[in-house]
Amino acid sequence: MSGGEQEPGRYYVGVDVGTGSVRAALVDQSGVLLAFADQAIKQWEPQFNHHEQSSEDIWAACCAVTKKVVQGIDLKQIRGLGFDATCSLVVLDKQFRPLPVNHEGDSRRNIIMWLDHRAVSQVHRINETKHSVLQYVGGMMSVEMQAPKLLWLKENLRETCWDKAGHFFDLPDFLSWKATGVAARSLCSLVCKWTYSADKGWDDSFWKMVGLEDFVADNYSKIGNQVLPPGASLGNGLTPEAAKDLGLPTGTAVAASLIDAHAGGLGVIGADVRGHGLVCEGQPVTSRLAVICGTSSCHMGISKDPIFVPGVWGPYFSAMVPGFWLNEGGQSVTGKLIDHMVQGHAAFPELQAKATARCQNIYAYLNSHLDLIKKARPVGFLTVDLHVWPDFHGNRSPLADLTLKGMVTGLKLSQDLDDLAILYLATVQAIAFGTRFIIEAMEAAGHSISTLFLCGGLSKNPLFVQMHADITGMPVVLSQEVESVLVGAAILGACASGDFTSVQEAMAKMSKVGKVVFPRREDKKYYDKKYQVFLKLVEHQKEYSAIMSGD
Image 1 (cartoon, helix red, strand yellow):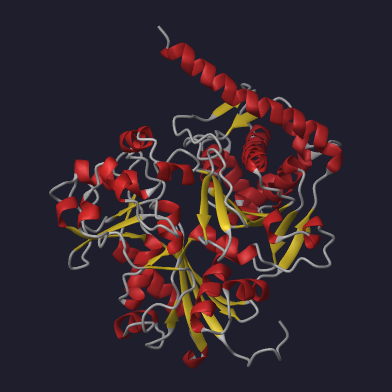
Image 2: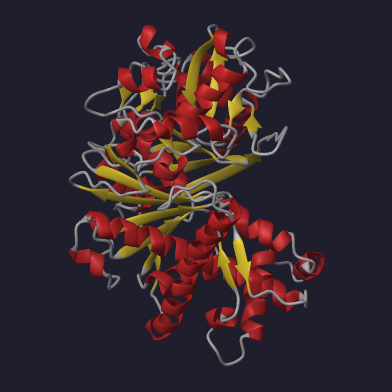
């Protein structure tokens, strides 16, 4: 945007609550980050597959980082505030005080995190109902959604949590309530994680069928009966108390929130691509797939009409871009898997020492080490004998099977730095093959995708980006601002302020193309062969499982 189009000096704050940290940015009206701050947040894992956080700890971190990014700014120029967060479940009592989601009775730990898999039995029973709402989550509800977690609380913590609960919030909605005192929920959270329908509302029969009829009886007051589209302005803006906590003026506009991945999608998918030689330039926005890749990865595709993709969540109406249906594929662990594979290797201490000596992070060092050992061949060819199936935390899409496990084939006795680098490469490739698998499922159902738009922490890794281009055969667009999720959150604040007439207008003006990475077409045959092996791995795993469970 040229400086003359709007009066200068209009700023927006975006706050992003990820898995391990809270981040904030001050963003101007053309989408440029002017200040950034982050702060780690606590996580507890009291037992395997139980992951918990504290809403008070997270809110304190939101306040700390927001104060940092607005230091030295004329606060009158800050027009709006937007929040995004992981789709974790926050539990409060009737006086909005934290309640324990654990057997220890520790009320500080009042959040069941998105990646928590405690509710396996509950989600299995929910899926056995075959209720019609399940067609909007790819036919199978994920253990990471809220209904199974709510059922787990009812069945396991009846006295200490369930009976005392007054409010169950998705974390993004908790943040907007904390800022404004308005308990309205975002359409994004409720449609994507709670089975709400944008046109029909809640389905009483579903909640009764799964054993959560309590919500129907009180007209859904505990889980939300006032619903607003993302970017809508909430109440009278910041309350005096929240304004003091955040270091912002009372009454600053606050937007209805988004889930973090959806904020990333909003921050990248609407970018003006003219002049980059991309096929999607002459195509509708529905030809673009936003891939938000951090601890986990989400694959966001939009369509004008609803498309039902087996094993892929959605279609969700207006959950990310108003007026469009959203399908959301995903991989439960990506960044977390890469860390797991690298840190668990015998050569990891050597890698740490060498990367530190060179003042590099471990992944930059591994990428340069791969370039050293590849010799005359393309780097991807180093994994000709090493193949990984990446579902170490189950498969979210397109198989929707949380019982699947990770697989590695082609291991040798040697455990040196070369072996570590090649295992890292094979893991990155496996994640890219998972993306290809999701794209093929979406296209088979009716999507037409030509270009990937990547954002999130892993998009800063050039090897990860190049492998996604080579393995999918599609160009990858990276944003000018690498922190696209924060730009997405700021876009919400900009919409709430009234400075833009629509989310689409804000997207077009606040997201910019940075770099485009094209696939190496000459390597296509090699990756097609590796993809055949990739698909064989899961086929074999199912065969092994059938053998072991047989008579």
